[in-house]
Length: 210
Ligand code: OGA
Ligand code: MN
Image (cartoon, rainbow, N blue to C red; front, top):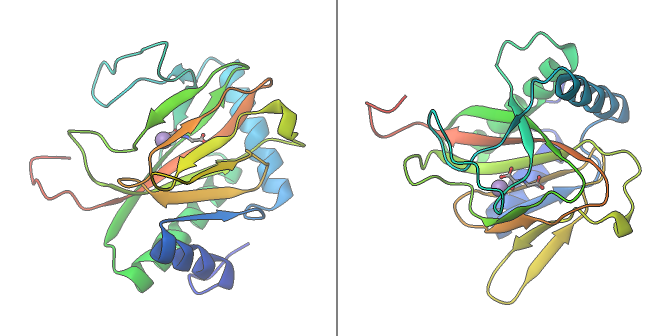
């Protein structure tokens, strides 16, 4: 699955983002890789490696029950799991596709597994922090097998004042959008909801910032 940055699938995503600020691809990850990553997410959770997600960055991000209820585990670039490596490589190729066409100067990718227990949600927000505006593109890859509409768990994108778009977290599908521009929220589901969420970041302007 070594895609080239000029692969039509990746180009479609870049074109969507350039023309309307978001993209959804129902078939992005091959089913074997989706299943492998879902199993790895569950395994890390069972080993106690996922933590309650905080709000904001820093050493002691605030945990506020009313804002987000997911559990996350950040990925390191040298993660030893072969499926995680395939995923990181694919995202790197997509990052290159963005840079070639849109000259966004995207420098790196940060990502984490996320697990929402039944009933958990993430209230409306933007994916930028007051102290870090390097995030340019948000990307969410869903790892859920046979998700049904009545199970909820939609990602709700607020496209503008009038329009919103709900997206079901279907396994193997990808949603991405401009981090600084699209407010969004995660609605509660009746079952566990798994994803890999990440951000392409540009270079920091502040030399004192990491
Ligand atoms: C996030 C987020 C969306 C989703 O983690 O910031 O908005 O559908 N996730 O999981
Ligand atoms: Mn978000």
